[in-house]
Image (cartoon, rainbow, N blue to C red; front, side, top):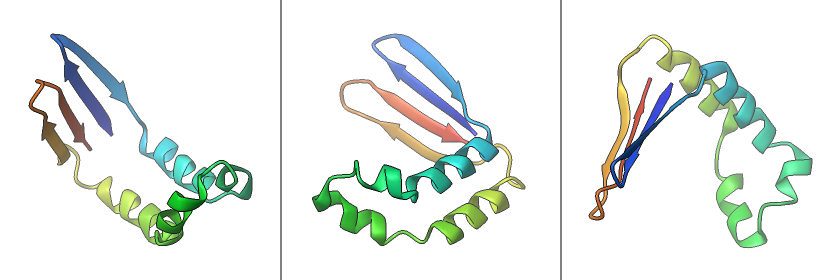
Length: 83
């Protein structure tokens, strides 16, 4: 997965391996991480099915080049996430 950020004439490229994304998903549901999430936001985190999210990331491996997110803000900031 690649994350491209363009702001104020600068471009950033952040490569994120899909195995690292799966590891991040596993860590989010760990109890020692959950205690740092504010109580008002924790209800949203409880709604996410992390097993299904991990499976969907594994399925996305077959769709290289697919753009998941392409956002352009009014101030000129652009963010693109590509598999």
